Image (cartoon, rainbow, N blue to C red):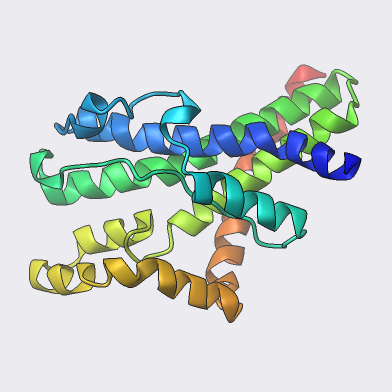
Length: 218
């Protein structure tokens, strides 16, 4: 029980921060490009309560963590966006979608910076170090996972916005089945072929940016 509570304590803040910033970023960029739907519904906020989905934010990640799954993911309540309100709907849709994964990459970078500061300062507190590891991992996973090019994932919306209009309409029709497609790929261990390269890219970006910080702080 103590190990379970410790694990939950380590992962709670990283997961909440990751999904909150992800969804708030979608709302912020949508408002910037002309759609106030999410803003008017109070979704352009860093209050995690407004973004939490009981099943996707709490139950799924908790179950995967407790089962020591090598693959951890979750999701929040989707931010509503009326794409017809966006200026230049096709290009703006891509930017609204990319805002979520970009925010997770940024959050992974911030957790890595926090980790570097802790290590350089000599504060080798195991709990904080594990929390920074969790923060880096969950954000890199969300970064890679959400870029998978199947709607309703962010990568699917980006791909839809890039396709010719007639093809985009047909491709968008798979959105109701997108989550089941992803679950099938996870079950057959095929999503790793997408996840692993992007995780390596994200990790490389984070480590490359923070590497000079190590010498600057010493």
